[in-house]
Length: 110
Ligand code: FES
Image 1 (spheres, protein in one colour):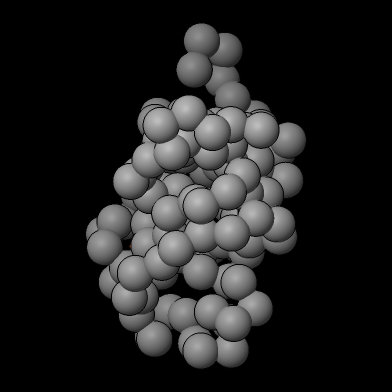
Image 2: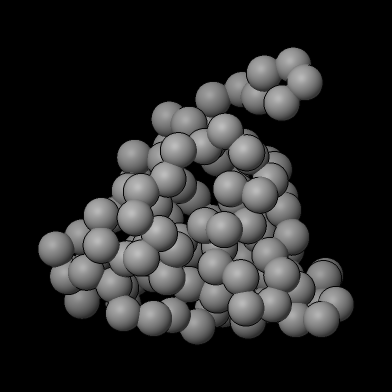
């Protein structure tokens, strides 16, 4: 769908919302930009707060802590949003601690 300057659409299946992830921007960064009130952790692959399951789409990734993502999980596309960069439109589910913040209804004016 989106392919402007390397941007891709990220759809959150839990809520039906989507946001644009710009080129060279992590998925977590795009989520934060779209949902300004979500708390984030380290943003560096070390705390595991931002774990997601990518259901569809492709991405590149950087190293993430094995304490939070096992090799099996990574192979099954359960990864850290702060460590992945879409190379196509993505569909994902939030499975980490961000779930409560992302999946709660947006407040009026948010
Ligand atoms: S924010 Fe800490 S691992 Fe992603």
